[in-house]
Length: 391
Image 1 (cartoon, rainbow, N blue to C red):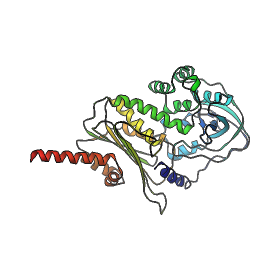
Image 2 (image 1 turned 120 degrees about the horizontal axis):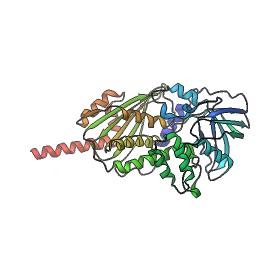
Image 3 (image 1 turned 60 degrees about the vertical axis):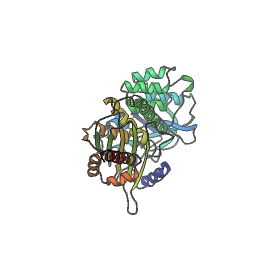
Image 4 (image 1 turned 90 degrees about the vertical axis):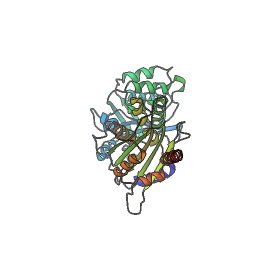
């Protein structure tokens, strides 16, 4: 199904004319947010480099998705992301070159960092993907000068602790309230972990890896907590997406479903999804990185409350939606779960409420869902058992 979703999204990308900046010369001076990109094509030999806008000063907002929901429009995000120019240099992921060292310095920086980059030719094009944030023109690097960076102190300690496992570094940084986007970038440059094991991780893989590590870490304790005693419905709507989250009073189980509305005449509604039981997910999720981003956000909310629940995510992507990266799911989910939920004492009443809040009828979701059908079947069996005792 993941391939089916990717094919659909590839068709979607081609329908949006992206206006990227025109780079006038082979040299750029600017302040990186800070931001880096590690490619995956040709792995283990990949293209790596910084992302640099042709402006100087505080550019942090260009790579701070934690600050975008409710504050920036879809066009705002696209405009400043396509202003970021990518430099590229081929390296092996296990290399310890000057370029790798510079990328680590950039990723560990506490604030925007000035970079003077010279390219072998004028940067051109742009990049858009469902898993990762878009960026603008790119070209091979000829040379690069990076100003001295002041490291984020918690990440600096993790960087110099070469006996600390990368997973433990990520968990510690999360517990120190380091932003997800910051630790993910540093993780991708091989800034954490045992000295002998450190290597570059493609940006796309590193995002899912950090979502997965943090989600599983939180779920270890969540699964020991008491279950909620009601049905809860949370919701939010931003960036041509609507998210509705149903929490049910069961032990941990989880499903997420995504519906993409037709963009042009001839298109049809497309729904993709995947799920896991209490014993966790086997293999890679059929819908890609969005699965792990949503799961992490739910685990985070349940952990804060010291409760356990089953969770079902309903996502509707409306006409005009542009893929901006899985941060869109993570931060929308966080926003939804901060809201006061609608509470119900039964599954039918919760589903009736969901039916009134979404464009797709609940019966369509039920037909597509593994968890909903299972929960409703259990309820019917319970009702039958009660009726048998009465008779």
